[in-house]
Amino acid sequence: MPKHTPTSLDPRSPLVLDTRELPRRPGALRTVKRVVPAPSDLGVELIGVPEGAGLDLDLRMESVSEGVLVSGTVSGPIRGECGRCLREINDSVTVTIQELYAYQNSTTDVTTEEDEVGRMQGDLIDLEPALRDAVVLALPTNPLCREDCPGLCPDCGVHLDDLPADHSHQQIDPRWAGLSQLTRTEE
Ligand SMILES: [Zn+2]
Ligand SMILES: [Zn+2]
Image (cartoon, rainbow, N blue to C red; front, side, top):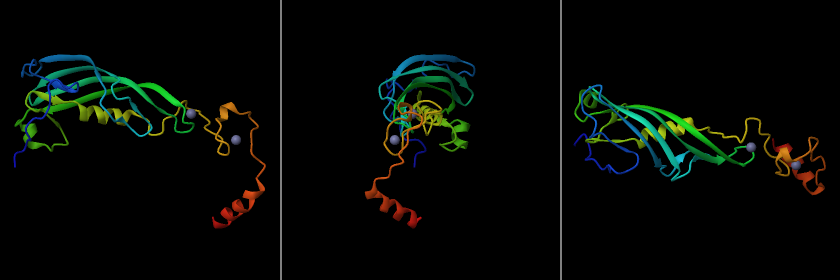
């Protein structure tokens, strides 16, 4: 079985880096500064980069003996909702990328596992997997509209910010009183 599947990367794809202009001489450098549309599903359940939003790539590609080292930052807007009150969150995220892409058939290519080090596909680099990993790691799993968001009243669902400090629901509807008794017995 061939070690590499033939390249299926499109050099015009926004998250594919083309190294044809980069001499394969250790130390040679090229910078990549561009704004590209974000791919779909770049995020976690409650928050992520909206598809098509501008991702700001500020990267450099450096030839090293075994491949190309890509480093720099990617930033973009993130949108989501607060895990406590469901209010919309608009923020931004900046991630650092540092990833080695080994030349095909280099010692690094031959002696490492596919998931340890990135691989060049001919002259092309698929930046998307590394970008996805970095963005997903940087996003909060429980995003909040602000750190001390008090959330919603569990009884009426109104934001506690919009309710007086002494807001409470002490009256138990008599029709439910029996049920809450039942629930308590089951615990
Ligand atoms: Zn909130
Ligand atoms: Zn309430």
